[in-house]
Length: 231
Ligand SMILES: O=C(O)COP(=O)(O)O
Ligand SMILES: [Mg+2]
Image (tube, rainbow, N blue to C red; front, side, top):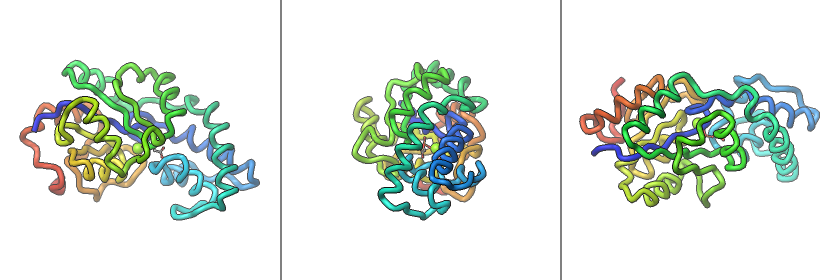
């Protein structure tokens, strides 16, 4: 099945956002008289959207649930800090600009499908120079459901009038793989992102976005999605 459009994840895929996310999360913790957490610890908390990040950052526990009032105050604090910090150290990963340009040169329409709230997604794309590449930008709160639910991918497919199997999802986490799986789309996972995806079956594991372009060119010869990647 040829690929007719591409959906890309944001944090850990297009942009290395962790330093600024960690700075905002630690600023929030300090307001609650909690000590800073190491960036690597906070990195393992990213992927499920801001609400989950705030729960995890406040409790220092991947499965932690902060008290609702504490969580509400934490979200307000995180937003205040991340609004001002979101483009301090955030940069596109190596290969992102080349990869996006090659995809555009192939005439493929591109979407950002992220669990990051849309209030951060649009400014961070603008301030890193990526905004103009994308026809569709869906944040974690743009629709009633976010990844791993298939709704964002299916919404992009409907807008473009294509089948889910013709949309390639590129991400860095099990949220991306599961959203693609639930939609019926192929999925490539980047090894450099924030989730440990080494054992996660997907259409293919890649080291940078330029490698994804080769996949698109050869898509017809790749095994169908759901077959564990042999590499
Ligand atoms: O905001 C998050 O937790 C993750 O965002 P992402 O979906 O772009 O990785
Ligand atoms: Mg991600």
